[in-house]
Amino acid sequence: MKKHLISVRDLTEEDVLDLYDLFKQFKTGKKERLEGDVFLLFLESSTRTRLSFERACRLLGLQTYHAGAGESSIEKGESFSDTIKTLKALGFKALVFRVPFVFFPYEDLLKEEISLINAGDGTHQHPTQGLIDLFTAMEYYPSIEGLKIVYVGDILHSRVFRSGAYLFNLFGAQLGVCGPRTLIPKDLSPFGVIKVFDNVEEAIEWSDLVIWLRLQEERFKESYIPSKESYFLQFGLTKDRYAKLKGYFMHPGPVNVWVDIDGEVLYGDKSLVLKQVENGLYVRMAVLYWALKDG
Ligand code: CP
Image (cartoon, rainbow, N blue to C red; front, side):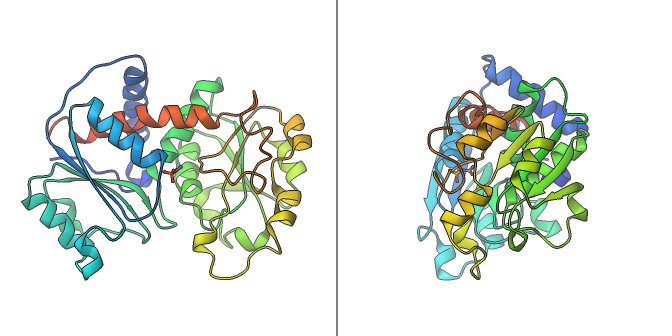
C-alpha cells in the first residue's frame, strides 16, 4: 500500500524522525531511483513548492506531468475524487496537489493505489512546508525541546502555521503568535499556543526563533487591516526589530517585501529564508521516497 501525506496530524514522531533521516541523507548526496509517473496539479500559484517537487521527482527518476488552474477537467465540473480515480486509471503513481479548498478525503479514496501528497490545501495544511520549517530549525538550534517560537502575521489564513504548530509541538517547542487580533483565530487551543502577543517587540524579546507569515490577501473576505503601511510599522520585520532578534527568523515565502519584512534585512545573517527554500528540495525528495518506495 502506498503512503499519503495529507495532513501533518497523520504523522507520528517516528514518521517525522524517519523523514528527517531521509532528508539528511538526500541532502548529503544519497542516490535513489524510483520508477513511475507523478502528476503535479497546482490549481493555485506556486514557485518554490512546485519547482522543488518537480526537481525532487526528476532526481529520483520519476516522470512529471503538470497542470495549472484552467488546465484540467476540474474546470468542467469534474470532482477532485473523480480526478484521482482518473489518474489511477491512467497509471499515475502519485498526485501532488495544491488546491484552494480544504481536502478531506473519503476513506475509500485513500485505498486507491495512488499516493496523495498535499502541497497546500486552502487554509488547512501545507505539510511539506511544516517539515521544512521543523528540519531547518533542527539544523540551526541544538534542540527543539523548550525552543520559544513565535509566528507573526496572518495566522488566521495560514496553512503553514497549522502544519508547523503541530510538528513543533510534537518535539516540545513553546509556541506564541503575534499579529492583528483580526488575523488570529479565536480558538488557539488546537494549536498548542501558550502566548498571544499584541506587541511584536514583546514577541521578539520572548522568542528564540520568529517565523513571519505573508498577509494572504487572496483569502481576505473583509478588510482585516487599515493599510499595508500601518501593518508593516506595527508587525513587520523592520531594521530595528531585526537588530533585537535573539536568534534566527524564517518566512515560508513568497515574501511581500516592505509589508512582511524590510528588503534590506530579508537576506541578512539572521535570515533562514533561503535555507528553507534549499531544504525544500530535500524534504520533498524524502517525502516522495517515503511515500513511494514500497509501491
Ligand atoms: N512556501 C510556499 O508554499 O511557496 P510557493 O507558494 O512559492 O510554493
